Amino acid sequence: MNNVKNLRTFPGNRIIWHAVIVGIVWLLLLLLNNNIDPLYSSYLALVAMYATAMFGMTILVGLSGQVSLGNGALMAVGGYVFALTSMNWQTVPIIGWQWNAVWSMVFSGLGGILIGGIVGGLAARLRGPYLAGLTLGLAVGVPAITNRFPELLGGENGLMLSVPYPAGGYAALDSALGSSSDSSSGATVDPNSAVEEDQYAELDLSEFEQGANPDADLAPEDLLTDGDLLTEEDFGVGDQLTDGDLLTEEDFGVGDQLTDGDLLTDEDFGTGTDLAVDPTGITDAFDSGFIIERWQASMAIAVACLVAFAALNLVRGRQGRVWKAVRDDPVAAAVVGISPSGSKISAFVVSSLFAALAGAVFAQILSFIGPGAFGLGLSLSLLVGIVLGGRSSLLGAILGALLLVWLPELVDGLSGDRGWPEQITNNAPNLLYGLLVVAVVLAAPGGVTGTVRAWVDKARGKTRSPLS
Image 1: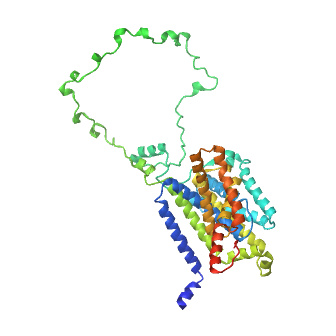
Image 2: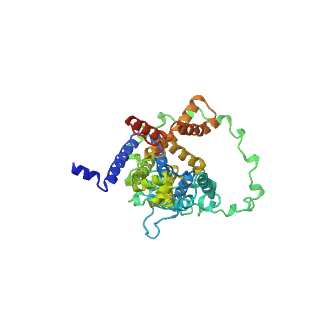
Image 3: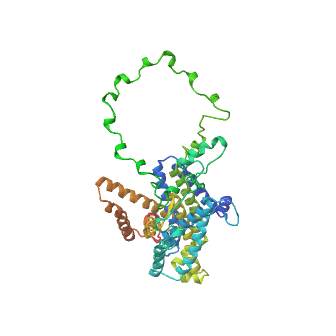
């Protein structure tokens, strides 16, 4: 018994158990991803992306008690940092290592921490509607900044990403054919490399310069007229082909048939010539085992599980208790030595970090980054999802992510069956979000997880606040 008790009180016991739980969930989700249709893998990637962002909302809104309408803008920060670093940097600054998507994710997280610290410092001085107004301005202002720097950020058109997918997949057709033609010489073709040579350098375009007349050197008699065109009168009646003019088997002798010996072989060509086509490049570029949706889902799942592990240790540890203390009574927390402003800033920084990582994942899923993908609607959707699932529970964040992905698909299915107009179909999810939020606030303030926990506590004879 003493050994069991010592195991429970071991300082790293909580971290070990959290690692085991997250690892098991990770493996189960990867197994599920490899055995479902690619369409459902794309849905799974979106759920993991939303869950990553809403883990930060759980800490900021649920544990810290701060209202945020700007986490979609923080996702935009992570997405744009990922795009700019992956498009413009070939090596890691100072270190000099080869650049890849992992480094872009790291810098996206650092960008989220920086912006979160700045906004959190301002938000620590505000409460209630003033805090909501600050974060609302963040949600509206950050996507609009892209229009001020169109050369760098792409403006309204955004930036198209060439995401560094694993070698052997997602290659263009011309890249695949190029790699097959170079296979005999041992050269390899990079699908993501730009074409440096001018393909039209040998063409003489001097005659087509602006103001040049291509008919300047031609005499009038050299030009074609209507009389030079062929008409039906140029062909006689007897010139038409008949069945007798067609070749038949009788026109060929027995010895005229081709045999295997008449076919050309490698020996008929010079040394070093190989007629066989090496399909290695094509099979490498189009790997039948590579499915882009499953790769995106596995990437999103990996990031979500790592974020969930960090969030679990924060929520269940000392920092989580600090956030709850400041949320419940900031004066009492200050009396015992807890800094309310420092607690609020730390919650904003962690939430911004998670949102930036989710934005980087979103950029890889879309292979595109633009202001339209990170508008005010995204921030409101994150807030709605955390309210529906349960604002103080990480499991509630996962349920909220499922609702955000499932509700639009439900509406699309209903609209297709009933023939609803497109305008109704596009706005119906927002209407459902609003109705669900009103219903949850009135009937179940703690969301799905909070309500279920309250029922369980009531059955056990315990009392607990529905918001805890």
